[in-house]
Image 1 (tube, rainbow, N blue to C red):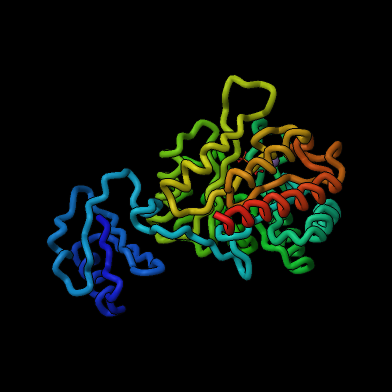
Image 2: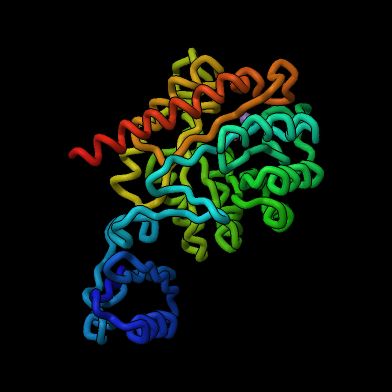
Length: 340
Ligand code: PEP
Ligand code: MN
């Protein structure tokens, strides 16, 4: 059920609707928009009778939602969502750049990369302290020590920190240090973890599962939002296909597809999407051109020594050039938008 308040509805009238939703045993999700507030209702196992709400003062209409998701959809919120991360934003007019190593390996390695990234005027730094690795014998991350290094990066360079939360047990810990909680591709359908980060007070970057459909991605986001955390950023990072010239097949067509259905921002990760350094820049350019709300890029000063994902890490000079290109492409798009 979706309750659309009329543009003239008062705050008290909105409050009365929220109260009734709770009294009926459901959960209200108010979403203020530019012209009116809409209220998503969840927690019902069957259809709700719209007449409960239709005649309440301030209610425009009460609509049954036919799509499997309610809170991520444009029916509830027409305008694009902009996620606030400290003083910065993801979504909105300027594409966000999130960059850094695959894994936090040491204080020196992280600081060196952070310096390169910060010098480009990038606002978001990434790096895994808890790494999901295919082999149990591969480097698993520095854990809390890694999180402390990331906090140092924030202190020194003012960049906001994006880092992965691998399981429910360490959400509290990661939340203490991170600005954005990343849910990795392998965990996109870890429903208990999704619910847990739905209760967190930090924005969540949700990566698409390796073989997830668009609906599955949106429903994973719905899990997070249904718990009350509306600050969700989606991320396309490539899917498994028969193509073997890249590590994954980057599905850029999901960007406009998501934008048609959902108000949530969507960024693109061409590093995992291709797995090859020489393909990262062209696909990052394409991601901006296709209208993504940002990109996530792995960068390393010594990729040959990287403890994970060295072959896909951009070298500092490649990254500097890419940031310039991203800004130029964005300018062209802005200009064309202004002209049309
Ligand atoms: C990562 O961002 O380092 C990562 C492990 O990504 P993914 O979950 O997309 O494989
Ligand atoms: Mn990686």
